[in-house]
Length: 308
Length: 254
Picture: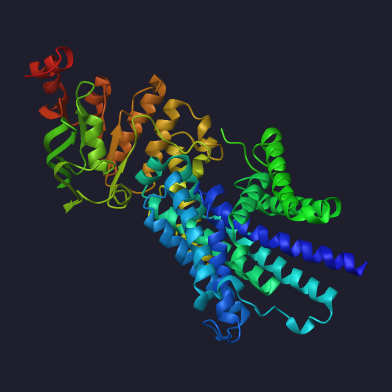
């Protein structure tokens, strides 16, 4: 029983970390219409930033800063925001296709840097011994799982409330106006470019924070954790939950993560051992089928508004 | 005193000069009409004044400052507002939100301030809301304040745009065909409001085809044809000018 509850806590924690990333995407895409297909790259920047700053000294790479975990998380959010702002700034008007291509490129570059810049990132071996919050409780696995869940849930709730506050604020009102009629908004004194960069950077900060939280939840990161599959998962989560809705972003993340994990467990149980590696693709198939169903029956997602 | 001035302003699209060496100035407190046949370059002239299109040559001065290269989104804070030929309300936003958006220099439009200065923002919002409701009242739209702007008729949209731009306390407002598509009774409301606002010291420049409205409102009229200034004068003098009649009826002037 305790095992099952412990697993439930572990599952929910993982899902909520995705919910954080999806909340970041919802600010960028759902509320501002910025097409980011480089999510994995921004998550990776946050994860590596916090990992490098908080880990003890390692022989083969830069490190030994031993920062407190919270400081690492804050730095992760700031560094990722800066990276996102720079990306947005460089693509000038942040128009859909250019931004999409650029963000995809950024994600590839980040992943390759993580893989090859051994002195900074540990290369293919990644960064280990990332401190976990409340590590002293690690010998009581069930309690430790629940405390982790508590920490992650608290971060998620805080980010959710902050984003809801922003979307109802005068700042959020400008984003809505820009999405509805950019020219009219400009005539009323709003700089479309400045607000887009702000929204892209703020969304990036949330993704970076999510990456950092995840790194400290698992305790280890490596470049293959930040492949385009991650970007795909997060997009599926937002589509399913409902683009534009923060509640939808969270619910969609939990649902899609449940399908992902469920499909993985199913194929592990049913498929014979030597086919397992190939059967892992069934997870992606399951998410794809789910997306098709949603797009057919409820194209706006669980919580999204239908667009006219 | 001159509030707005165009000095030899031109705009070329490829080989065509949509606006060709326009010079004029607008005095504080006047209502200036800009008329001319379709394709004369009136709306392009407005786009140049408002900064949504960049000039090819010439200079635009607002309140004595050179604003030729000032981006469009900075011109409202500089004192110049505009409305559009086809009104552009934010259809899914409520009327009140439409109004609040036009306020300049709002603390709450700075991302971080929403977390550091919530009280100041709430106070500013309350004040802006009162002002917005009063302005909506002025254009007879107050009872629709919480409805989305998409429910408005064409004429009501024009009134909303006028009220919205007034939220920013502009010194001069460019109105692009305020009477187009407005039913006669609403048009009277519109004319009255423009007069009232003008009496409070706001300068207007308006493009209009409704000559009755032009002669009732405007102190002075500029006539444009083929991108250039054809003539100017009081409404009735201009209406009798043979060049103007020729421009409207006879195609291209020599």
